[in-house]
Length: 368
Ligand code: NAP
Ligand code: G4F
Image (cartoon, rainbow, N blue to C red):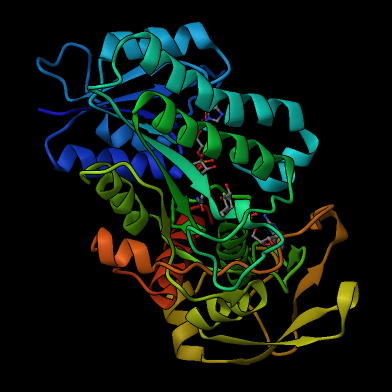
């Protein structure tokens, strides 16, 4: 049985990857942070009690900012594969916590690589580094491929730039099987609540159920290449199954604005919206409602604001969500991953939105 170690196992990708590797027969070890509240919701269904013999899912307390701890875990686990997913992953928050982000996301990656080298595991352990399309930032080429120059636009992206190059350097200097997956945005019902897609699907569920009046959004002109996290963790695994250690772009090759994502998500519950106004004065209004679809989705119970009606204002712009430097457009060129990894996403954007909206409507209906 192969042994995998996942840092960031309690995050969106960590949870899907753990499921995937368990289904492939791996023993899966994960690093979780100590916190005052339980932070293992996404993987609780995989938990095995310590009394279970031959457990295949094992958690260790750890933190990317603690070299001794990271080294000790790797020594104990002796992994065949490490998936380094742990990071302070929120771009906007990284402007407020730049030093911590550099430490966890940048130097944290060095800690993993150096531990493998110092422990003499360079021949045994393959390493996947969670690199990001944020590296392209102020894009120098459209679409972005493995050869596109980087131009990071946030403390998060700059930290991830260090992580990218230190991974390449350890591969070249020490012959480590270390690879970067340059993943474009990927989402799911497990996505953190403050990333834009989940904020939208949660917000729409609450507005549609009369639990809130409207969404407050930042730059809705930004465009992203959105895929489903389930498809993307499969690409992570494929990257480590190749004969040669290389870096890959993982993307759908299509881009959509935040504005269009919002309109598509409202349409999923039968509501057509119209955008009026410009810049920070832009709003969205309910233009029409497909009654049978709306009521089939939402049911007949509503919160204090009641049901949606024609003309209701359901969105405003709030400058607090703007970033000091923005990444306006991301669209990946997945040619290499399609040809070399034979990777093909199963979800399209409509299917992703449907799954996320359904899940959040169900979540908030249960709270009514
Ligand atoms: P996520 O949901 O935010 O999960 C991040 C994980 O890292 C969580 O388990 C978190 O623990 C853990 N973590 C954060 N700081 C840590 C520290 N100092 N020590 C140990 N663990 C720490 O992120 P995700 O969407 O799954 O993304 C996974 C990785 O891919 C991240 O590195 C992200 O930057 C990168 N990435 C994501 C995307 C995307 O679109 N999702 C695209 C490209 C790259 P807690 O649960 O305790 O917070
Ligand atoms: O969902 P986001 O916060 O994701 P962002 O900044 O693209 O970063 C995510 O994807 C990266 C891959 O490219 C990962 F590396 C990173 O870890 C993370 O997972 O924002 C997407 C876009 C941005 O342009 C943002 O300005 O949506 C815009 N946006 C507009 N209104 C908003 C909002 N973003 C958030 N979070 N909240 C808003 O209200």
